[in-house]
Image (cartoon, rainbow, N blue to C red; front, side, top):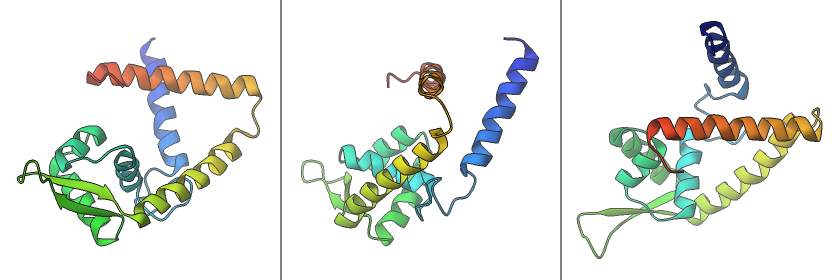
Length: 148
């Protein structure tokens, strides 16, 4: 890829970030009143119980940022902290019922939102977008040394 194409890709990614609403910290792209980082944290905790350090690794955020993020989720009643009985120095993070319900709502709203974006495209175009995002995120994962 030449420099002009790379700069075009950068411009397109930046446009995507703006149009998708990723710059507004008060709401998800699908309109749920939480930040994207808060929802991503809840989604990770839906999969498994984590420590702040583990959540920090999954979100690719500094531990101090994740601590503040978790504080906001605990304060809002989405997450609870509990000392690990097996290792009293560790604090485990769990979703509350409110957190579980919120993730369900976000999932439903997201499906509607993504469907509305894809509605004007053919099935083939939708598959092309899916494949392209897969390739792009796989490349990012490899660059960061991730296996996911």
